[in-house]
Length: 336
Image (cartoon, rainbow, N blue to C red; front, side, top):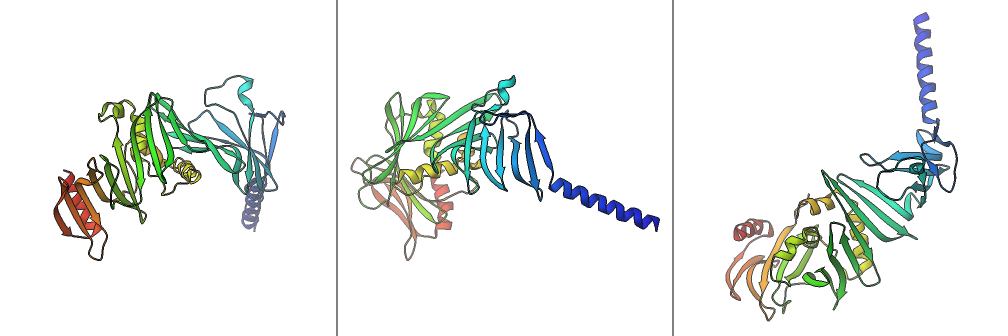
């Protein structure tokens, strides 16, 4: 009887403790919110989840923390401090930036997205992405990539290379990404609807298929040398590896970039050129002449009977009927 009573008491105690933990009140004095100064901030949990008050969360590996303010189970505001530099003293506790939540998402102010080896900070204004930065961290290495959209251009810069930049814009109903160095264009990439008819002259034409979507691009090394591309390697990797959506709406493109740099895969583009968890299927690798006609290369065509062709000096030197899956091995052998 005594053993049974002891067991029941123990179970009741554990149950009450669990209930108290799920509905506990926590206090925190490690920060000060500039607009709501207090010596201690309280946060109440309900059913184990933040319900009302202030809740601190630390971004692992960084000297950075955020505080969410809840009202009746809904996140209303997030408080943070500008800058990633080390802070010390009482001033380091003051959070002077406020972001606004709406339906569980930040719609005004900075949004912090922690990635392995990096941190993306997206600045929102009235539900629209205004600009964002990507901070890169590695052993003895730091760099910041900044992306800003104006009415007709998306500008990409990085702290390591202040000489070059990438501009994304629309010209003649085509989306173009162009890299400049010291104010002079050195490389560009232009989206194509298809590879029929006259193509951009003296350009490299590439085609891939990813997630069921076909992408064709024409690119050209304007300087006709490799030095500018090696000298500006971060921007070169970005320009050659970013797969932009098929659209001429820069708002859509900018939102796509914001989503991309909120994922781990985006950093692989920077740290390891071309690295991706999902490899696209290759369709074309061609070179055009001064008249915009195909001069050399290899391309696969979807048809009732799909086939590939190899071009040499402006003429088809080989044609074979083959599936896209089988063409991948043919392409790899051709490129060796």
